[in-house]
Length: 162
Image (tube, rainbow, N blue to C red; front, side, top):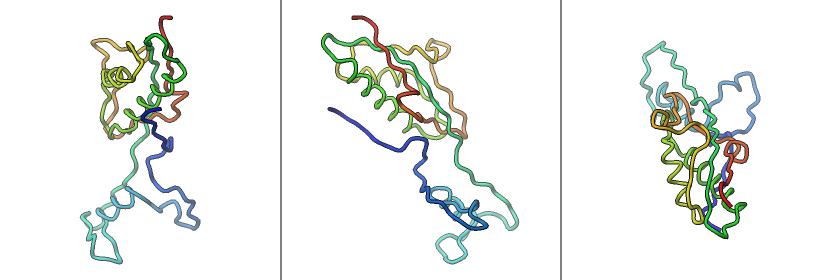
């Protein structure tokens, strides 16, 4: 009944098959593999020549996952079922957080406006983290990727009013 998204949690969209062998821990896939090709070059091809200086060791690592947890309070329009709104709020907030780039802080006003755009929601407030003029962002460090790992545990939705 609306915009529903389904995606893997706690993943950064890298392939996850098990690689066996002595150097299996060095096997990179996805974006990490592409970054390694660009930096070090590709020995069996000329597409990537490499840009690192000879003998340089550059460690390419995925970003640290920064788990985001929120508590949101909604006031509903009359006659709107709370159970439906809870799932929509979780989907909208998880989509907003998980689509945020590496090192980008999340304005809490974006969370409020996203939830407020859901049909049936009359008003929204953030219960946690604290939301005031001096604390209006979820701060994310440059090497971190904000993520909702488990929508039902990380996004607590409660309602106010009758």
